[in-house]
Length: 123
Image 1 (spheres, rainbow, N blue to C red):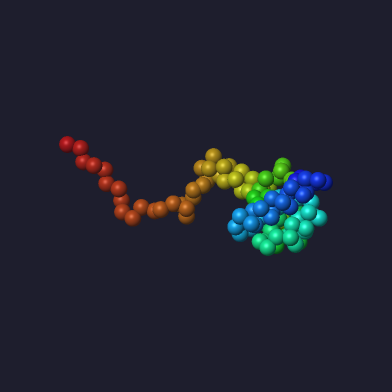
Image 2: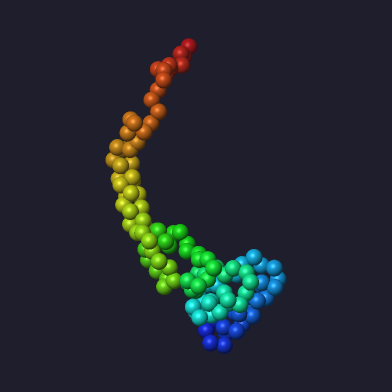
């Protein structure tokens, strides 16, 4: 977490500095909600939150986290909208099983020969 207690003043100063330097936006990652809201009100550029505040002008959520591709990693600041990791593991296991059993690829998954293959004539 960034900007707790007195350190919040430094984060606010840094946000002002990047805005004055010409930045088009400032990312506030793992900043307390109160401070994120204060920075959003204080700077003229958009604030983008990552675990900061719904009051930020925009939000970032890593798509792998959102989709639940990595089930062991669960930071407080993200919301999992699906559990695709479990579904992906099942699909990969089914694929590997079919490859080992030589049932994939089946006839419908390969290109059929258009003409018979002719053996070269040996002299």
